[in-house]
Amino acid sequence: MREGFYFMTTDKDLHPDHLAEVRLELCNGIAYITFDHVAARNAMTVGMYQSLKTICEELAKSSAARVAILRGAGGKSFVSGSDIAQFSGFTSSEDGIRYEEGIDHYLAPLAMLPIPTIAVIDGMAVGGGLAIATCCDFRISTPDARFGVPIAKTLGNCLSAANVAWLEAHLGVNVLKRMLLLAELVSAPELLKQGYLLATHPAEDLEGEANTLAERLMKLAPITQKSSKQTLARVIKNNLPDCSDLIRECYGSEDFKNGVAAFLDGKPPIWTGK
Image (cartoon, rainbow, N blue to C red):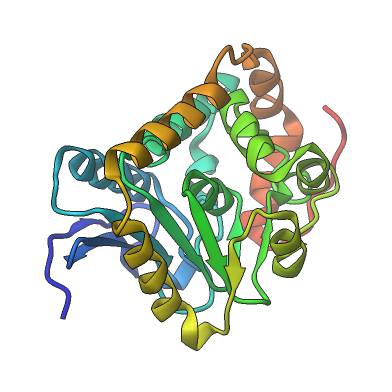
């Protein structure tokens, strides 16, 4: 049995009927991080993002773990994105600036963890889920997993420059354009061939394969691993452009307001370009 400590959050104002939680368990040098918001396919609330950040900051200061494994609860989704209900409270384009800066702030400690990280994906890794999976060093999934950022179809918002740069470095510009401009969900077999995924396995084998990979990583030089992954991260993040004008335009648009309202009402959005 895994023993460890837990960071939990419940956003009662957004979801009074069910728990939204990020859970950390430590066992034999492996940190198991679980996204548990099953009723919303593990969509990330603000509190969950904050918990993930805290967990990663604590792991960075501790010698208790040599590898981290991240996985969604429920067996049907890794993380299906960010919780859309939070966007209904946005009143101006500055809310979008703060939100995108917040996402960068929450995910930076995961990307910069000094230990190797493994994302285990069964189901979907979409939106914020794709960002989280891409912050990990290795990704394994079921063959039927799907990946994407379908915001051109759903909400009409956009990503920060840091998020786009990170995704482009791992996925390549052509695949990322399909995700962002065509709102495509790309299949696991394609991303396996492309190198984004390390391997695919049947769902019943994922946990064992993740542990095998973790054990392989733990046999190698930890300072070399830290230096290598953090050097790569700094290279990707070097000299990012200021794209705040584009973020303000998206989040301040009527399309974004209508997209959020349509999503929450279960209706297809109507885009006007305004």
